[in-house]
Structures are given as structure tokens and as C-alpha cells.
Amino acid sequence: MAESRNTRRHKIMPIFYNVPPSEIKYQTKHYGNAIVSHANKKQFNDETINKWKAALSKGEFAKEVLNNVLTELKAAYLEVSDCLVEVDNHVDEIMRMIGTQ
Image (cartoon, rainbow, N blue to C red; front, side, top):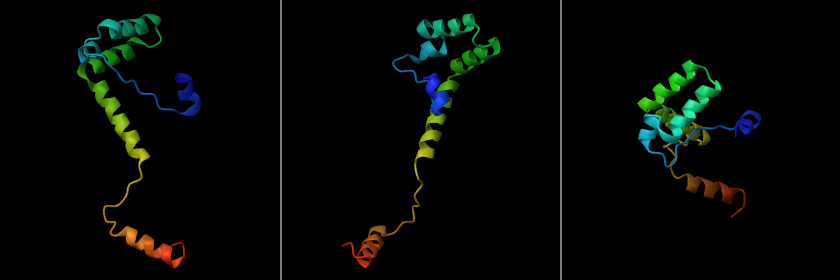
């Protein structure tokens, strides 16, 4: 996934499926073990690990993921004006004029 993210510019966002909120908030069980593993491997500095722990305990990480998903979804859709009136009638008339109906 990380390679795909780097080479193809894909977005990767962590989603916690079938994980009790308390396990994330209090970093217990598998999730807690993963945090400890990252800390032990020294892949990330202590400041980063502590920021993760603080954000997870406050639920801010879930909000950040939600905001990122909503931002990505909004960017994927074309905005259409609410002021469109009887567009179908105009399209039908234009199609008649060019002889396709």
C-alpha cells in the first residue's frame, strides 16, 4: 500500500473495522501492541508516538479521517447549480433542432 501511495499518488487512510472504540482510545490489545512496536522499532520519534497517543485518546484521529474522507468525496463530485429549470425541455428542443430526434 505504501509503495502504491508513493508511485501512484493513492490516498491511504486508516479505518478501524470491528475494533471497539475503547481499544483505540486506551491503546489496549492489538492496537496498543502496535503502538509499542512502532516505539520499539524507532521508526518514528517519541514526539510523534506521543502525538498519536494523545490524538487517539481524544478521538481526534477519527474526526481527522472523517474530514479527509469528506474532503476527498467533495472533490470527486461536480457541483451543479440548484437553479436549473426545465433543462430536459431545452435539451429536447436542441436535439430536435439538430435532427437527432
